[in-house]
Image 1 (cartoon, rainbow, N blue to C red):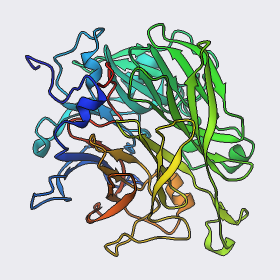
Image 2 (image 1 turned 180 degrees about the vertical axis):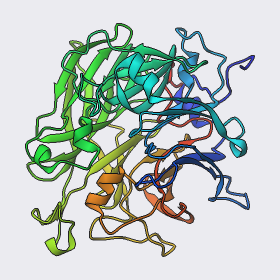
Image 3 (image 1 turned 90 degrees about the vertical axis):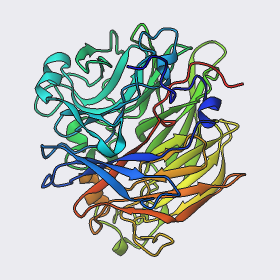
Image 4 (image 1 turned 180 degrees about the horizontal axis):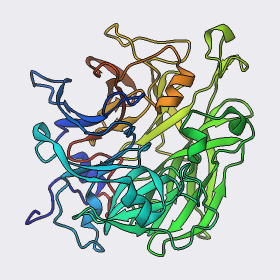
Length: 466
């Protein structure tokens, strides 16, 4: 434990943007068929280094079949909250769950080139203490580590609704469930919060039988995936309002609130509108009467395509849907990045006016029936997926795997894991960096990225910028 707050904690987004640039990235490596163990790759991001853009260390776990997916830090800027009793924690450990095994690894990355497993939490402990399974999103809060789960109890994860549990941020013991009153929430995916305003927002994907073995077309076309977001009284652990986008807006996934804690708005990405195959972004905000509202502010059209060029799943539609699978917001709340995994495009929107986003840049890479190559001439499997923005907003990193069984349905002829980076122009715009291209070891795919010293997807700021 430090004798002063970790220097990678920042009281405001502006201070975080002025911090030193990232030296390393930590990226998931997953074995889609379970024939190999999953791991975390440590990647050199120092532009003047001889090993720049290379994997310089790997942490390979001893088990197989975990399917690493999302992961996050043990501590972040929320530790600076006056409500925190943990201001002197180090941002030292990565909490890495296996979405398929429900096993959780705690990895010590204080020395990135010597990163190693610190602790393993077996699935039986998770089941016994929470009744939840399929751990997914990790967020570090003032009083502990919050973990959302996509499954409830039982073998198929449908014995009771999924939810959030809390871990001790020092011992990594599982404390128990978060929810006191979940209201209408019966599915889960992402969540995030505004600490000073004491609210949380959560979203929905589907239950384990709807995603583990691939997308279920019948469920999608009958609108049985999630299409609502839920607003919570964070301290009371109570769902105070649910907004249903409409049942045709299937899979309301990533939640991105404004980083400025004085602002009461944010964004949610929707994978597909089943009436027209469009992708969508909704802006949500708190009205003058204190209730929450939401409006669709970005629409992304599908691309017509010869059915002969499409995977069997899409041949009947004769088009490629955008498939909005991830979004991320720059620390100054100016640019929203939208991964269109189906089209093979990364979009950059100026959201200075969150009710009227404007497309400011776009990169094409990969994509169904397109397969756009990287500027270096090499291939990029699947399409842009998990996106991570540097704190200063000048670099945008992304990987390509969505979820192993979904990869195989939408891209049956593709294989591989890549990570790339795009440079952001002074006035917006994106340009793929020709010199940054990582091809992961054979048989492994890439998913989420975390940057050394934190990043804008894992910090909860307590004070407004000045």
